[in-house]
Every structure is written in C-alpha cells, then in structure tokens.
Amino acid sequence: MLFRFLKSSDVKSSEITPENIYHNRREFIQASALLGIGAVALGLNIPQARADVLANITRSGTYDTDEKQTPYRAVTGYNNFYEFGTGKDDPARNAHTLRPRPWTVKVDGHVENPGDYDIDDLIRPHTLQERIYRMRCVEAWSMVIPWVGIPLADIINRLGPTSKAKYILFETLVDRKQMPGQSRRVIKWPYAEGLRMDEAMNPLTLMAVGLYGETLPNQNGAPLRLVVPWKYGFKGIKSIVRISFVKNRPRNSWKRLAPKEYGFFANVNPDVDHPRWTQANERRIGEFRRRDTLMFNGYGEEVAHMYSGMNLKKYF
Image (cartoon, rainbow, N blue to C red; front, side):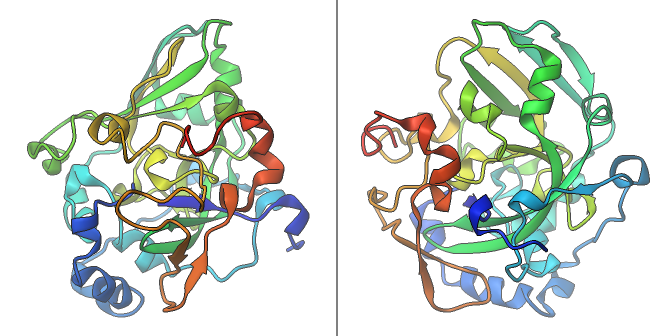
C-alpha cells in the first residue's frame, strides 16, 4: 500500500503484501464484493463518531482531491493488518477483539517531554483535519480515503525532540488476546516502522485517528496510525503504542524480514521493481485498468528536496 493525494499545484478548490498472498484469486473477488453487498456478509460494524474527538474537524483544502472516494465498506473491509490475519478480509472479521480505549502511547528516547501519554492528551491540544488521501498498494490495489488526523509535526513539536533525535521509531501493540494474528510468526512482533526526522516533520505526514468523519475502525489501525502519502503503505504503521526518538536509523519490520526486497525509505519509485513484481503500475479498487505509478506518488514538488543527492535505486 501507499498513500496518495494531489500536489498543491494540482488541487481544485473544493503494508506490501507477499506475492503468494497477492496471487490468491479470492482477493480480487473479495475486493469487488466489498464495493456492494459483500460487506453485509462480512458483518462489518460501522462505528459512530466520537463527539469529543471529531466534533471540531476542519478541512485542509491544500491537499484535498476531488477524485471519487472509495466506498466506506471497501475501505473498512479490505485491509492489510497481519496482527489480525494475512487475508484481506481477516482484519474486518477479527479486529473486534481490539480495545482502542483506554489507550496509552509511550514516548521515549531523545526528547524533552517523555512519558506515557493517554491518546486523548496527544490529540486534544491539536486541531483535527480531514484530508482526502489516495491509499494504494502498487502491485494490487488502490483507494481514495478521507482521513481525519493531525500533522505529525504538530505532535513532534509539542514533545520536543533534542538535537540527537535523527529518526523516529514507531511500534504497534503486542497483545495476542486482542490481536490473534500475533500467535503466528508472520513477522517479528511488535510491528515496527521508522521515519527520518525531516520526513516526519513534512506537512504531508499525518497521524490519523479517523476516516470519513468517524473514529478510526479497528481494522484500519485504531486508535492511531501513521499516513505517509509518498511512501509505500507498509510505512503506515497501525495501532501505535510507542514513539521513540532515536539517533540511529531503526530497523523496520519489513527491512528485517526481507532486506533485499523492502528498503527503509520505501519512497515510491516506479523505476525500482520489487524483485518479484513490477511497481510501475497499480489498480484502483472498482476499476479493471491499471494506472501508471508516479515518482514519489506524484509529490516530488513537496518531498523530492529531502532526497537530493541520494541514489534512489540504492536507497529504496
């Protein structure tokens, strides 16, 4: 997966899946079904918005897009979230066991304000924004989603990283009772992901707490997940319980699992194929024709300066 929203100059005013899973024929059938009555069969629970969290949403028009949004049932019923299973419909079936409240996020490392923060204490001092992003999995599928969240930079500024903090490491909850998929050693738990500090501070990087004006459903990473629009979707770590400010580049989960297949940066580069499939194109859910993949997912204007001088085929 990766996240996509239009460049500011284009705006009108208004988790890479392993190949053996991707090639399973049922995925496309399930994705199509979820656009219609298939969600009923999955027994999806559409949550109501929490007034204390989402009441004061403001729209950030800079990065909105007028592209057709993916139906809510598809967004919440077709997911990568291995903590609840490796099938695309497993999270929708199994994530009811997750308890997103109360929720504590541990902040540590090279930071002036470490501690164990209740999630609402992290959220409430900030203004929530609804931004419409495109979420894509380049080798298989894509979506257009109106996320609700907070620029990660706002949270970082409040926490006060020191000059020694060069990267941020995120970790997902580990609890086999709440996350039955963790009983299988699909990856080494906890799921871990990282960003360089300038990437984390980029205005495009979002800490999402909701979608479609509602609180984030369990299967989509409740209650707190990362959205990094110019990177592949495995950077979008879900159900975050720890944020560490570190000096050295962290080893993210997919880098540990398959270092020759998944790089740390995970920037969208259609000229760098995955060893087992092309990344030059992708398919939007509900469409049959594949689309060309854009460099930096179309956001070179906003992010290319951060990688000036880097060999983007080597540092993928």
